[in-house]
Structure formats: C-alpha cells, structure tokens
Length: 177
Image (cartoon, rainbow, N blue to C red; front, side):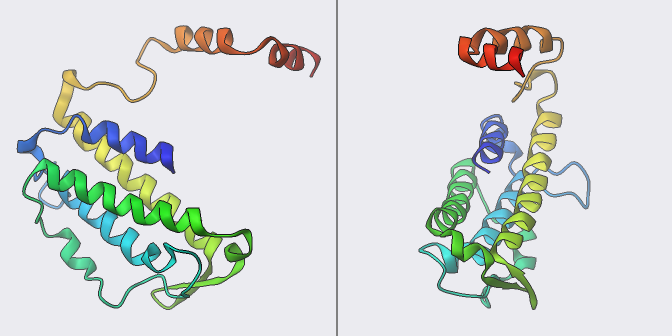
C-alpha cells in the first residue's frame, strides 16, 4: 500500500492549485473530494486500530460519509495535509497489528469481516481511488503529464536496466532454475 500511496503522491505533485475542485464530469469527483473521501474512510476504518487491536468496529458513528463528497478543501496544502493524515491513520493501524489480530473480527456497516478481510477490502478500495486521482490529474496535465511508471516506448530500456541490476547470484539462480 505504500507503493499505491506513492503513486497518489506522484499524481498530487502534478496537481495545480486551481484544479483542486475540477471534476471531469458533472457527477465526477475532483481530486479534493477523492482525498476527503479516502481520508474519511481511513479514519473511520482504522482509527480505532491505530494503536493495535482494541475495537471490533470499523465504521465510526461520527463519520458523515456523504459530507466527504462535498468540496471543502480550499487549497493544495489542505489537500496534501488531508491526504497525509488519512494515510498516517491507515499505516499506523497496520503497523500495530499482530499476526493474531488478522483473524479477529472487524465490523463494517454491520458486516463482519476478519481484520485481514477488511484490509483486503480496503486495498481494492484505496487503489481504485488512487487510480482515479492518477486518471484525473493525467487528463488535466495532458502532454505535460510526468509518468509515474515506465514511459511509453521505454519498456525495453527499462527491462535492460533491471537486468543489469540483478546480482550475479540471482542470475545464476535463474539460469539453474
């Protein structure tokens, strides 16, 4: 998930102040709204577990999910602060879980999951929203977009570079199967 966050960091780094509230359609979400929703979800799901398994509820009673979709972040520094705060809650919870915690129950909207199932659910959810951010910012940047992975037409060079980085021991292992 840290690599998923890093992709989002890369997209947000290319977002301009004037684009925080820009959506691609009337029913679409802006980058600011996507960040608000992600952070709200992360606080609700994982805030109770940020210091280890102490609660069995993964949806706080104080969360107002619908409000997460109403634009409220006024500038890029607020967007980035909200982004970092949400991820901090999520990573803190993961960092404090023990292997035994993974099979314990966590209820989300009256649906019981194991903590591991809840993590898997959120991996898909958070990844989906991060890729929405990437798509949104990439569309807004157009030709100015700085790729977050291998640039078009550069796959062969990237693969060759990766081959050069392999240690001689790893190359021997691959040849010997």
